[in-house]
Length: 358
Image (tube, rainbow, N blue to C red):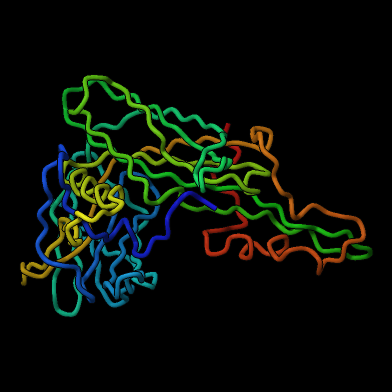
């Protein structure tokens, strides 16, 4: 179980924003209008990496439910030089682009055509600079639940900034990937090969938003926690954390600052009712239509760190250890099927290209 609240909506796409009151040093955020059912939500990220680039198009539903994916949009990446590159519709409101990556100095925008309307983002340029991340981890007891000590795994990053006077805006995302070994029972005669291992991935603390603005400090480094989660038997074998650093533009940084305010606001009697966070996408034919989400262009750098069970100072339950004479039917379903272990998380039986990276 990771340390994260139940996400009622896709936080990285849409969240209500509260006004900051009292003695906040951040300016009051005046967003007009309430979030209504059926509003269009568009979020996309295009980077200089060779990975798949994703755009999600959806519409809001009643509060407490994830937006519904829009399946009939035409999604196109635009360059400032006039090149148009279509995304491929993969279903459920997801659109993908691969085989291309952002080029330094180039500017990109997103076009979405839906039901006769054209939605266009502002052009954003690929940033020039990023930082160098050095990762570390710790296992500890922390009073997370009812003031009782809970075993927690934490990952930290020390980021070293380049020597430049140019503005640098950064944010980070963290993902875990761990190995899960399925049970293989001895047999006689012609036996099938042992089942392949499961590689299971999930975002660590999706509501944690780590941001850094170099103009706000005179130092060339910063250290912070990039993710925490409860310790369970996911750690009985190799466990990787991949930290993706995104160097973003000032407008994107300000957008995520507003989202962060919502996440950190726990609510009080003095809160003003929520309002939506607006991004950089608009309807070119109807500028009054409220569009939620953001199209982000970023320079990216991924850093990884791994642990094994030898690092864990706590007892780990091992439900899938072979016991002589124990019938196959008596083993837990997670010992047999990857999907039973993953429980909705991403999984594969093929090791990532970077697995066993020293």
